[in-house]
Image (cartoon, rainbow, N blue to C red):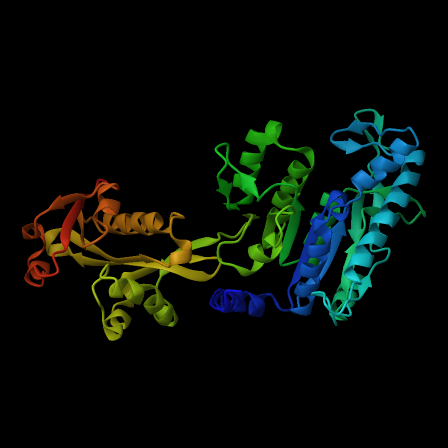
Length: 443
């Protein structure tokens, strides 16, 4: 075992552990996961989340279990608008299938063998008639019969159980005041529950290697609800039905106030923990609040700025700067945050008498490189310069000239620098001077 890697990973997870304690996560997954060997590991990971003080609501599906029962009886279910039509016979299978699936889940969550990750956990699972449902009714002339929709979630009862340290397990079945039962979709139950509870996270465990991918196979890490809806509409024909339902439900929940909605692979061991407790994550997030924010640096950013800058100074990529000088010039610095964590910075110093500005101290922390943050900081400085009617940006660099050349900068002589800057140019360092003319909008 690589002890140093373990220690580093544990330290990396510490801020997330502090943040998540006392928060509410709703986690939805299909019945196929319960039938796989992967569910045992997932139950260990879920138990770990509860032990860290996170309030967990699990929502399970049971489609394959119900379909198997119907197949044994020589029956099939019809579909309409992407939902199965549930007649009385099918509803009977739904009850049996859900009961079996729920029992399997509770059994796995009750494991407490001495040599298992759940040793000493003593996890308690709560359930009940927390979902009030109503029939979907007649759609386009088709009677959906016992296929239902969530009418209300008993948030008070669920919150009481969570406050007692219990895990709440919800099944895709709801009950009406008339005493009838209705088949529900796991995706809708999870989204409605997360919205009603004002959960901090809604997480769907989907049957893909990671989260949402582009046509070229690249993992798409972040969406706003509007971006997600546009992507969904353009890609709907190529997506598996259940994945499409999860993504659509995540988009809806994010638009209704759930802070973070995640799509995480159920097929990769540990993907849930990686998504929650590492900087890089493992899946896709839908959020109405921007995950990436650029803002002016503040005094409380100083130590984090130094953590990012100092290694690059030691490598000779940045000019060494005194901490006091950085503090005095914080109003010149812009930082980029990802989900509240400072990941990079840049500074701009004006020379208005020459119509120029210097871009300097462009730095991104190693875990966040090659994700577009450097580009975002560069564009931000360019826009700031334009707003000040500055004609030219310049940068001095010893090792990253190609980064700037590829983005429109051109090599030039130190003679073009503003007089004050030229006086302090150090020939022994041998920094290359690059400039870029800006297209300043006409006043």
